[in-house]
Image (tube, rainbow, N blue to C red; front, side):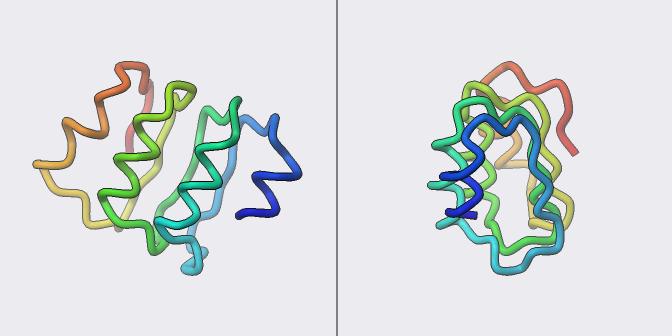
Length: 88
């Protein structure tokens, strides 16, 4: 993810579904991608807290978070940027 973030700064969509080596540490790199609008983090090792950090990124419009253990108490954090058009 670090290499992707550094090499493809203008990427607008990224799918890392089922990449179990993608963790909360990777969120740090993803947050440096200024144009990233859509990301699929389903079935990765990202925690609900990491997903909430990603959701706060102003450019994010779509988040796919299947099987990350998202609970009702984290949903307000996921919706905080007010710009999500798709949350799965």
